[in-house]
Length: 407
Ligand code: ATP
Ligand code: MG
Image (cartoon, rainbow, N blue to C red; front, top):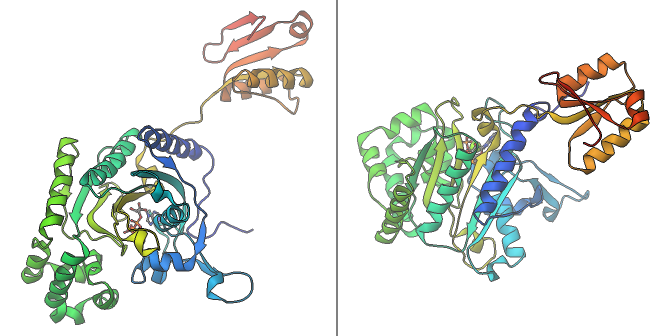
């Protein structure tokens, strides 16, 4: 027996209706706000993620499904299953010269992502993300709009008891100063930090604040460290930008809390970063994460373009939404005359009704039983009906029966 791979799941049975509802809502909400769907390939050049996600991230260092194709182990043949979608969307944005269109250029996506992680509740190796990317606007309206879209989409799925956490990472300039301060104040504790943080200390010190290790967390509680973390390090311009984002969120009545420890896992963020968390998901509680990434388009070879976006984990969202049931068919044709039954189905489906029939010519009672389970009405097509040209329509919720000449 060959089974599904660890960390992957079949989406099957009743669950599919809930997945469809989530996807339908996404399409409706994003299209109504002028976002275009984008579907990029599931695999890309490995180099794209190394540069786009960042060499010092867990994703690139530990979690990528990378393999070489075409026999030769040349680096240009190295491909990777996408661990996230921003890098791919930015690649497509550059490749198709989208920056020539008048900004903003707004995209949304839905699709599977792949990360080699330890499977556990809320953490799979193939999982799905819904996300948006908004290009071309430096103004804080774009940050607010992005967060608004996440809120509106979540609301449409009936999920509303989530917490928005917000922070500003500042620009590369003010971050540089902050990074040095963090390094300095953490220096005496370097030995006590976890192994990952020791590496981060050199490669990407801010990421240390994101560490979930309990010991590291305790170290951050020390006054002198806390003071640096809580300091207002961002420059005047970044500060004004962040003020505006908050002003818009207030006007939109979107509740948020400031979390100065929030730095996000990926290298490319600047200024606004945010996460949306649920307190009913256990330790994998982040449903959505995003922020501004003004440097990424240029870094991947495009013209400098401000951008902001987010990604949401659909499996985690799935846990929170009310589950859908299979919708009932409009009609089920109950008949031992297979040819007439299939023809009637063809006719009804062409008219826009959902309908099915029994392909195995089972006994009348069995067919009716099946109809009652999956359909609103049964159409009984017996000898009499066929000869005289009418249908007996049975309402399967009340049992009432009616003879009709048209449907
Ligand atoms: P985490 O801290 O949970 O690992 P992350 O920072 O790696 O999250 P992002 O890259 O920001 O996650 O992805 C956005 C969202 O995608 C997450 O908030 C989460 O809902 C979802 N997600 C990320 N990794 C997984 C996974 N392995 N399985 C299921 N969902 C995931
Ligand atoms: Mg992760």
